[in-house]
Every structure is written in C-alpha cells, then in structure tokens.
Amino acid sequence: MAPGPSGAASTVAGYANHVHPYLHPHLGGLLLGELTVEHVREMFAAIVHDHQAEGRQIRQATLNRIRSTLRTACGRRAAGGADR
Image (tube, rainbow, N blue to C red):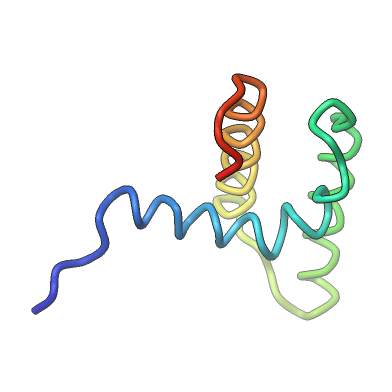
C-alpha cells in the first residue's frame, strides 16, 4: 500500500479545495486592503444560496473551514508571507 499524502501536502490540497471554488470567485478581484467584513458576509451568503439553488446543502463545518482558510491567507499576506 502506498503511503498517504504528507500533512503539508494534504493541507495545501485542503486550502485549494476552498480557494478555487469559493474564495477566488467571490473575493479574488479584491486587494487585501479592500477586503471588508461585508465582502466576507456576502461571499458566505452567496455560497449558501448557490448550494440551496442547486438542491444541495453545505455543512457548517465546511463553511468554518472556508473561513479558516481565508483567515490563514489574510494573516500570511498581512505578515508579508508568500502568495501560496
């Protein structure tokens, strides 16, 4: 049996699963300094709405992970960290 992904690789994959379908489409056109709480609220409302319109539910745990990914990205950018 082949070993599973490393912790770092699985973390990056998890972040990508939040950035590409959720964060980038809703917030990708904004600079960090332009990002407001209202932008984030609108993003989450749109995510929930889109899922409901497609007859799917999105779990609160998924929304929490998306929020955590956004917080991590903002923290890294504010600290002058890498883009990725």
